[in-house]
Amino acid sequence: MPREKGRAMVARNKKALHDFHIGDRVEAGIVLTGTEVKSLRAGRATLTDAFATIDNGEVWLRNANIPEYEFGTFHNHAAKRNRKLLLHRQQIRKLERQLSESGRTLVPLAIYFSDGFAKVEIAVATGKREWDTRYAARCRA
Image (cartoon, rainbow, N blue to C red):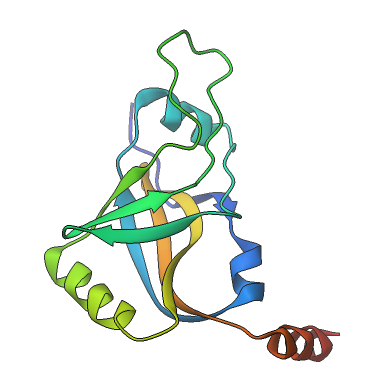
């Protein structure tokens, strides 16, 4: 069976675009179990409360909700477990340098399949103030 081509969006974090000033974006692979992949292919994921951290030179996606696969058995995955993200060492070092500045955080923007592989788009972000979000909403209207 040939591998699928292109990009298929699974979940997008619209709240992050509203609450943060988005800086550099990075595409990362994600380590998943079999039932997580099946759940993602069914289009079931939520990134609203998710964030990423760098621990001991590894990037982790935390608090992302990938619900249990409905046709799975007792071997199903935990819905909000920590998932490792796959990046090159140079990319991780660059992110660590950017996060060392005050007020910066790593925010996942989207989960999608790119040529059959599950990917996460993460970004270095700075939180908006309340007046920033009101001004952005006024400019959109």
